[in-house]
Length: 126
Image 1: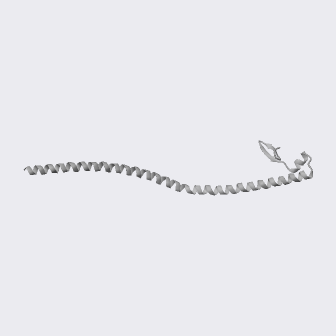
Image 2: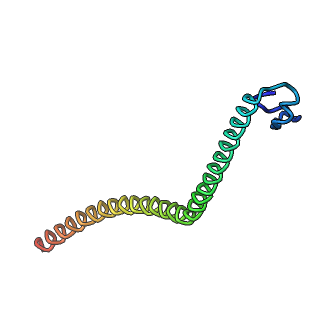
Image 3: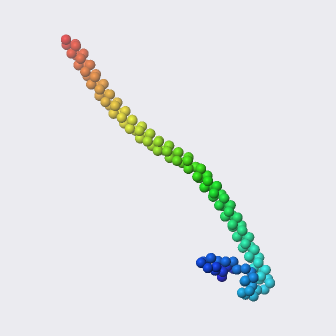
């Protein structure tokens, strides 16, 4: 027996009634009154605990519902992050390509300038 509970099999404990306790051991009236008081206190504490657990379960249910309602927003946010990453990569590639094209345009401009200078020189000799 542990704190007024006896083994009920398979590791469970079953509350022994005050009558069964008094039958197993003689108690004075004061001891029996004290047992009833402590039993009442334990039962009240157990009720308060059950009520608190019930309130906790209700609040947790509410929190889980709120979390579930956020899932579509989280999916959308993740899709936006992926789009942003893709767009940033595309922008980097476009800037690289722009630099390459600018370099080629500069080379073409120099070659065209040199060709124009050669044509002018050739026309000047004629």
